[in-house]
Image 1: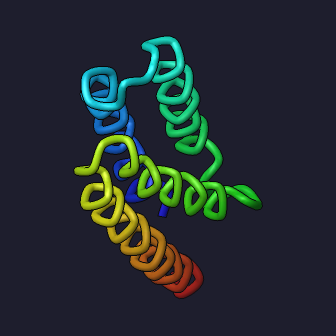
Image 2 (image 1 turned 30 degrees about the horizontal axis):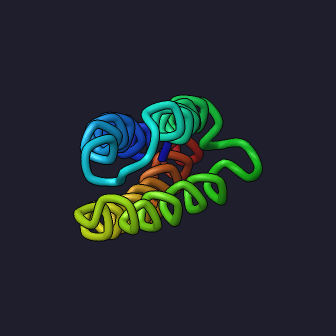
Length: 110
């Protein structure tokens, strides 16, 4: 699960950075505000890469997905991209757990 979720989070890291550049032009917000919010979200992506398997890691990932979708109020394309990444997050968690279970069964069988 860790590899799939971390891959999704790294993709989000870059999307958030690019969305911040767009938000500076479209959002009418001060650059300091845009980069503070984007910087916190980008840092959260990196921190979550290391804590996916810890308690609350997946839930924080879902909170990040909701924040990404909500950023569509500033950059409308983020509604679509946020939903896309939420789907990727679900798939990463769902199929990652299945892979982890299969690995555990294989390890127990040998």
